[in-house]
View (cartoon, helix red, strand yellow):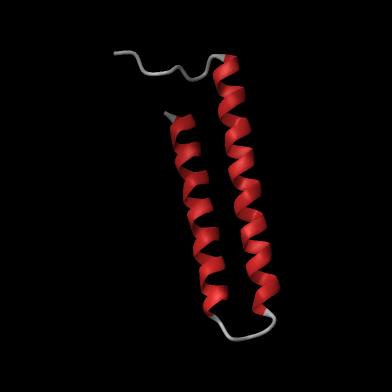
Length: 68
């Protein structure tokens, strides 16, 4: 159960970063372009780390595919 909560927390952080980038995209301040790029870079980094975490968890046997 704690592993599922970690996955959900990372997904929420990814969505928050995407929302922050959208906010900076709609702003007219020229400095917000850099903030948008940083927010998108965070999103990509979080997505890659979540993917690697899932691969590690599967190879370590912490998670299993659903059967049915």
